[in-house]
Length: 273
Image 1 (cartoon, rainbow, N blue to C red):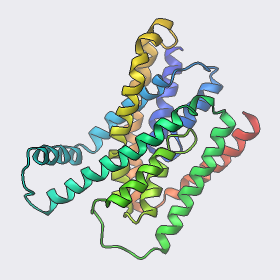
Image 2 (image 1 turned 90 degrees about the vertical axis):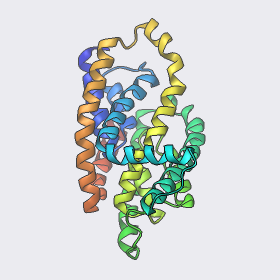
Image 3 (image 1 turned 30 degrees about the horizontal axis):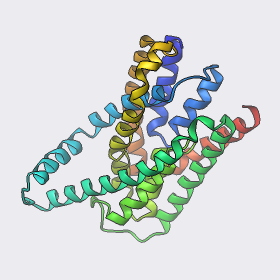
Image 4 (image 1 turned 90 degrees about the horizontal axis):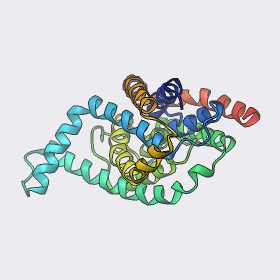
């Protein structure tokens, strides 16, 4: 892999990780077009870590508050106010979602290397359908006063399932998770915030599982340090700006717009890849 190829893959990861168009799917297609069939899964996860840093920076206030509350919780401190009570519920919801995603992630991880680019493109169609259906569902649902309220345990379980589905290439993790949250009755602002914060343990867990192969990959020279670093930087920078753009789109309730990209992309991919 060259430095330029690493930058291209990093740029794609940064844009596609947060926009609901499937980063893993786009990376697989890009690797096919760049004639890089043997890129290890660990490299993809390394790029995910870069976008994870973007999540930390963008949501630093919320994450900082959650860490403080978590520390108070494990030291058996009583809730100081309703805000702390809500954050404890948020943390518990993240744990439930992560456990369910973890189980599904283990089951689907064996399928990821076997999926062709054409199957990935079918996943784009699934993502587009989820985005459109969630938009229609939200518009027909009665307005709720639960804005800024943490997901319940049942909602968290369903969101975790949808995030697990989003581990398949072509199916956007952010798109499926946000759609799942909306289907479960979570308001879209909370759904967007929760979707990205719940990705933190999922991405870290995937990295830990694949980290055992770092030595083997370095020995084979399939990637190289410079392409990996260049890809990491590109993914971080583009990811931060993509996240900022997406949060604005979520507030406007226009996620279904991305279906106008996903459907033609899927059709072209199925026909020509």
